[in-house]
Length: 321
Image (cartoon, rainbow, N blue to C red; front, side):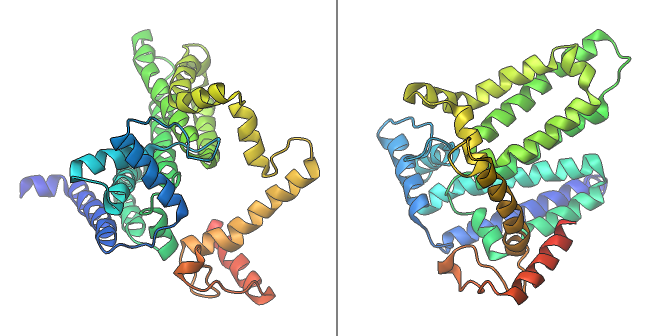
């Protein structure tokens, strides 16, 4: 009892995380959500890894997106006695569970443990599209959550604990954490380039508060080594295919497959911002008025009317703000 009182926040956090993971596992056992073609490809990759000795580095048919989910799926195929959709998705839920752990420590570090519990409670449930992305094995989503949160956790701890006037040994002991940050960033970029805004903000945090350690003590070098290690599967694939991974990245950011047409790139960026406000945020928050459903087979999409556009923009813009 004394232990529970002393560690009430940690125990409560563990209970919430257990509930969140248990809820998602229950959905898996109920065979929800429905599968799709992308998940079918991920299942094929996991099967080939588990039973045919393959070692793919990117999603079949693409020049980007890592396959951590496929490797975890292969592991759970062996642990559960054979291939199944539930075993494949268990790897996704495992990463989501680690994301909850990172969020608890991150919010506790930046604000308070009470707010961390509130954050976990809000994240433990969500809209249908929100839960779908945290259970279905289509690649990228769970890794973006996990690595994005972990990158911010490492960067925040380094920034808050940084002291200029400390022994040289202290600076040297902190350098592996810059390597860990780089490794997380590399794995995140390999998994899905959509994580770049999170990494950019976490990196900016380090640059503002820890620039001396980065530039003088070699934190940048440790981070670069870690990033190259995490991104190695993508680099290896690109070298074997004669591709430039960074050119592929820029093409994906612009959304056109070309670097020459700036007007189209500008339109693409503006379109993505509008869609974030009008579609992504209402979808993730379970917007009750003029709802937007991510996948057509999960329900009817609301027609794009002027009235719904105004309401969705107001909701999405207010939530974003």
